[in-house]
Image 1: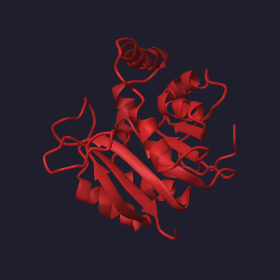
Image 2: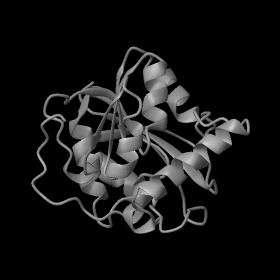
Image 3: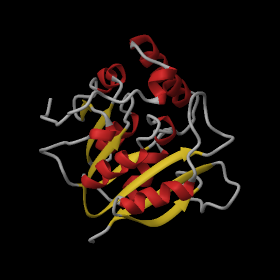
Length: 213
């Protein structure tokens, strides 16, 4: 494992309150594999990132789960790295030996040897499942891992469309905290296919960029 600074115990996330353990991790992966087997497209995030930063680019999948997005990015030609606080999901992700995965708390993330990425992505409702009160620290830590001009992309559901245990995040608050972390607003979509966001949409894909490009 890479050396990382982890001065504090990981904050209990809303995700950890929903599920934990190897059986839950396997069940979570199985849901996506079943969707893919039924013909549903589960790789929209990776294509979105690839259009934003063409390969080969260095991409950090923050809140990577079992590695769905990071592994696809690797197959598309990127240097992808995944981090997640759920050790059981990371254990499944590590079955992909072509992509590196690490257990890490996003609110204290410090990848000493891998500081600069062209893009950081938070997919799969990572933001609404963060530990309460940690969003500002997460954005600060992710911004610190971006190269100047690098992108932070976060896709998550909005109030009224969130799954169990997830907490609504106001987009205005998200933008203010991103700005405080040194990230400028670029665009917002309502799908990973890039359809423009309009008020009333129940899902948002927000694109911010680190200042200093």
